[in-house]
Image 1 (cartoon, helix red, strand yellow):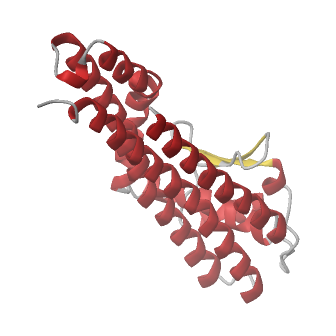
Image 2 (spheres, one colour):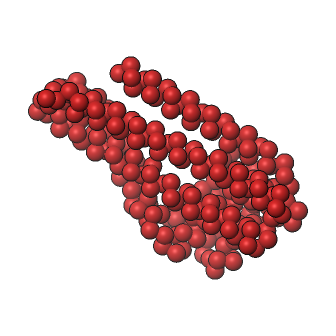
Image 3 (cartoon, one colour):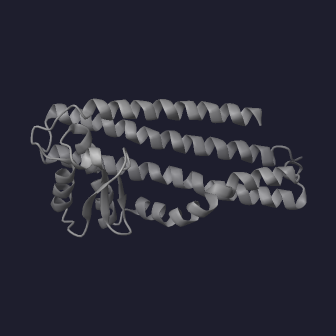
Length: 231
């Protein structure tokens, strides 16, 4: 267990560092005001229109860095600091979320797989680790009956969450690539503004990368605890 806590602590530290750097980047690029004066909402509506998407609504949502695309009701949800402001960070976030709307419209396969996993992961992720620990208490490490199968079930559940984290990576990177390509090709931002938007999205993507690595490391650790003690 000590090894797990060391691993967990290391991943938590890296995650905090990346998250903190992301916040600093968005704060920095929020000061780079767009020469065209377009707010995040206007950027989003323009990108949707340019991609022939007219059934997606752009709305404001409370909080900071709470921006997301909801495929169920087809809404691009922008945080207040993005929705109402005209800067490089807002342009990057708005275009990125619209990138997900474009993925949805074009039936991007990775997005479809991630969406299919959402209801499974929402049910299994909260109980996976407890099942593994419970199984170990019941003797899974020695390959003993019921405990072993309880732990294996926990590992399977944990595997779904890990798979979800890794499928999220191409979805997020692709959305950013679509956003940056549109911002550049449509001359929506100046070269200086583009650099800020690109850097902000790179750091946002790194948060997902750290999460995926953390999920895999946790899965491997618990798998070793379950299977490593068997003859």
